[in-house]
Image (cartoon, rainbow, N blue to C red; front, top):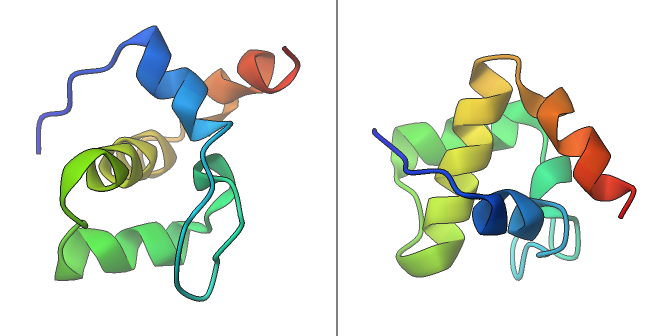
Length: 74
């Protein structure tokens, strides 16, 4: 899945919380890899939430989650 990344999307990963499920209330950036992988297998939710989870999956899968660290400190 090709995901277009911009700075707004990256900022949303460290500010938007998961609205439902086992990890409700947790930042998208803090969702565990196995949960992100589950979405990748089963399907991402529609809309912006799904796009953000897909982006976080790509970052996590490719070992790039640390790119979000500077954004967390804002």
